[in-house]
Image (cartoon, rainbow, N blue to C red; front, side, top):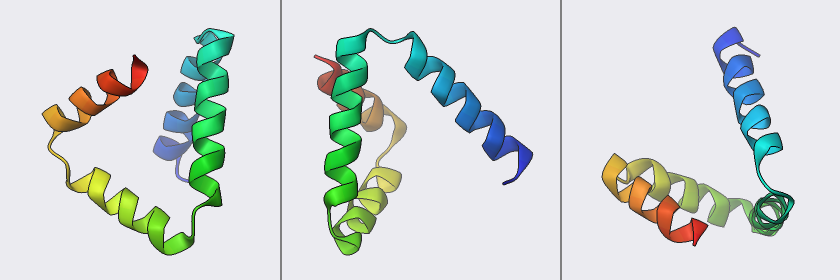
Length: 66
């Protein structure tokens, strides 16, 4: 794994550990749901996310946190 990817993963994990337990559980459930999807559907969702403009991504994240 490249050093920059390893660093990003470590930072993501550190942020996750600082979240309240309820929010951690919500993220675990969302991750589990995503992993259960068929590979084609996961790829389609990834592509949709990557094609979103940053402002739209930010709005989506804020909506999900409520």
